[in-house]
Image (cartoon, rainbow, N blue to C red; front, side, top):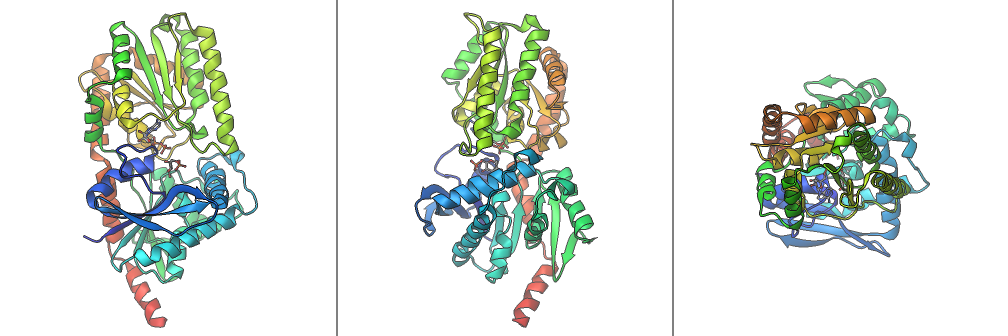
Length: 467
Ligand code: ADP
Ligand code: G6P
């Protein structure tokens, strides 16, 4: 079995049992088991850039480097999270392109490539993760790297016309053409990228790959998953203080809706809070009975759009609570702090409704975790945005338009009143998919396609001979 080298912006802390963010959660367990190298940013910011250092954790060599203050500002907070993140989440209104962002993004990718090359062996499979590192294969190829290099995008890929709203759209897609395999979360994402390749670049698919010059690239869908068995076990663990409190409430006949998201504008949080407020207006019988727990830890706070969404959410939660709270009942409990997954799992299990309504999301692992956490005898109901990648598989959930506050409020009502037989039927269907398309299946299917021989090996040899 060839060695796998994962490259991502952040290297997950493999000593910690629990990670936040879909990418780290999906890869950490798999890498612990399989071993290999994990290369990326250490998460530290130094005054000056510094070289990578290696550390062995179990079977994984974690190779990480700090970034300089300028790199953090212009590459991570800048081009990655103020240009690519909003653009790829269909939010052209939030794209904030400033001078130097693109140059520093390119420079960090060049530095990653230069620092990574000495660690690579001939047969290693290199697997690059996410939008921070789209130019990495191009930079590695320039340094003579002939390894198989795959790319997986954890976030959505936008429609060609939307991508074309940025000046360097063609360059972005050319970066991707240097990989052997590009993996995306959904068939919508695959359709968006392949339409760009065909309509904007005139490329043609032959035998499952797009040829350009002497190379070819495959573009395929690999929906990411979780470790459902491990998560279910965590959800059944001896309940801690919070879950005990919840169970006490349950005994008193109280119900709970739960939301768990990084506090990101892509997650549709204001619309979600409004839908809950609308539910209380339309169903006064839910007052003092149905509460809403929203856990939304801070993320990327130095980007203006994130500071704004935080203020908006605090004001909304305050106004709904001000309107409906009683001396002995608070409708919305909003927690703006990180909460460990060990705590989240029993909380998801103890909640009657999982309310997952991003305006746009690559996959959304919380939706899958909510399904895995349920008691199969008496499962809760998942209310899920049609614009989460997960909706493509989890169509047995109650699917909603996350912009339509009225519809969401009606679906919440339907979820809260759903008979046990229907809850079980829907949950069984959901669980089957979450079990099948799990994190290990995702990883193995990607690597299997990446390893599959194609014309690129010969192209590599021809280049070598020519050189
Ligand atoms: P994203 O990748 O955009 O953050 P996902 O829903 O795909 O969204 O993944 C989030 C992951 O982070 C989930 O596996 C979730 O359990 C984990 N996580 C851990 N702690 C938290 C927390 N306090 N809030 C949100 N997510 C958390
Ligand atoms: C999403 C992205 C990941 C990222 C995570 C957390 O899941 O796809 O690449 O790591 O969010 O965001 P952060 O900016 O803290 O790494």
